[in-house]
Length: 453
Image (cartoon, rainbow, N blue to C red; front, side, top):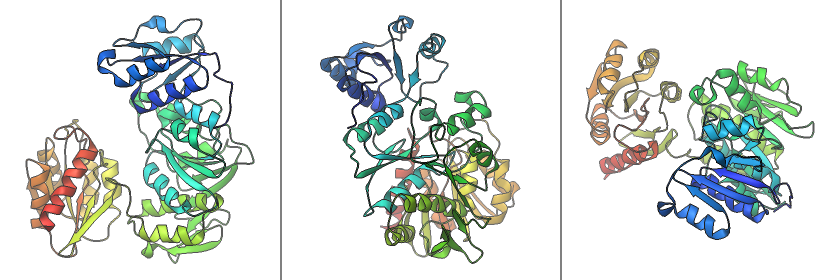
């Protein structure tokens, strides 16, 4: 762990525990800070807070008194999910108290170089792709951030022989001051999390913070096909490395006319040899491969990963094949654009399973993609009727309504034939029948296994 005196003797309020807040508080205590912890869960029910109290932190749980922000407070470290409209955060900012996230702490102590990956879609897949590509390379990869373990916890044990591969959300990036990845990546930008950021402009500003401290010694990998990204990176000071599905790029990564992934002028693999389907995954692969080359990954390992990587669980994850059918789990598709992306990934006929929480949105944007790629739609949950009606409007001949996902999987199999893809891509949140999209995905996997058995 790199030595830093930045927090020694400082009064730091850690707002919100969970994994990131707990890890941040523990690290700050090691760095000599005077730590106060505030969490909504009462102390008697809060094992994390009890442990931190034993370690020397002052613990205030069960409420959020405004007097926690006072003249002696030097920093607030907040859980990324806590909005900036929170009264304690608003008061801290009014009093010009820095509000940071644990990613900032990670950058202060990491002996390993950091690769930061952000974007509206594809972050987890690209982060995991890159982690796999770097195995056996010049440095050992460690994965953290918005995926896996908390970044400051991983950074505490990282050495100069490691490289820290981090997935970064806009929520995390809002709370950085000196954070500087030596390779930053911006995959794409679409309108998202406006309820948190207040405007699309604020959201873009948050994403751009990944590059704001980079210098000409660093690298910025960006999507040359995304106009929003191209605009954002203009102000970047790092060496710019574009990637594209449509443009020939000499100093970057692109898909050539013959279907080859070309990285810095070197052909790596033909798109037909890749294990993950869809143009969006080719884009993710181009970005990850460029970063892997810059970080010292071996070409052999990179190509092996591109050929064998099965995807991230619940994100267009290949589950299994049976009687000529291919089963894919895309439970992470909690909105319509994510379902559209997954439908665009397949050339084969698709039997789509969709449904979930009713948020009162229209599903009309799915109609063009239903017409092009979908042979049958099986719906379930609160939105079963609405999605079924949309499918009928699109001219889908087989439309079946079911009550639960378990039933929907069995019905989808009955509607399918050899050569079809059976795809769970719900276009809705999971909370009508499941606690999380992960639980929904596991239900789908179990239902597939039941059919095969």
